[in-house]
Amino acid sequence: MIDLKYPVLLVHGMGFRDRKHLGYWGRIPRVLEELGVKIYYGGQDSSGSIEGNGEFLADRIRKLCAEHNIEKFNVIAHSKGGLDIRYAISSLGMGPHIASVTTINTPHNGSYTVDKLLKFPACIVRFGCVFADWWFRLLGDKNPRTYAAIRSFRTYDSQEFNRMNPDDPSVYYQSYAFTCKRVTGDMLLFISNIVVRAIEGENDGLLTPRAVKWANFRGHLRSAGNRGISHCDEVDMRRRPLSKKKGDGISDITDFYCDVVKELAQMGY
Image (cartoon, rainbow, N blue to C red):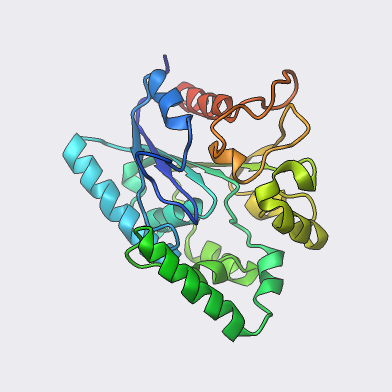
């Protein structure tokens, strides 16, 4: 059992929502709950802007604290969710309710690939984003803003975001990077992996270690097997271990989350 002082708030990334069935986090919540960790979910829009999702998270945190007599949360955020919660803390005053923030492949420093993507004619990009917004509304988003979300991943916009949203000194921040070992490591992200690799280098199918380093960077972690760890693997999308192989590296992504929470407990969070 893990003696964690504060409960965990899982904040999902872009493209999916927190659901009871077919949830974003796979086996991870169940495994943590079996160790005695209380789990809550962010529940923000899957394709909202950082500002809109940050406001939703701030409101949700206030409500959860009041309803369940919670003092603070340990936030574990994946991908864009890390930007959403940073905005809620720095711009919306949620620092007193947050003990720690652990981000997993969050694009804190922006993507050179997105820089190049947005050099395509704006009408083409916007058309695709309008279609995406329509689809995300069907899936439950209240205010999808795919174009604004994608623009926030540009390196310039990331620099401005970081300047306007400095870390709260009362909150402990840490970040992790993961990558695929080869472009075929995740066929769902095969094409994007090739594109990002050609432009930026080794990546998890979407983001490079350079893009995700932030605050107390805990390192670039790899799998024990030959596939590596993709953006989908980071949240257990396949609901199974990464590899049967044991030894150096991660064999099951749930082990990583257990280790993160155990360490937070040892630190007094």
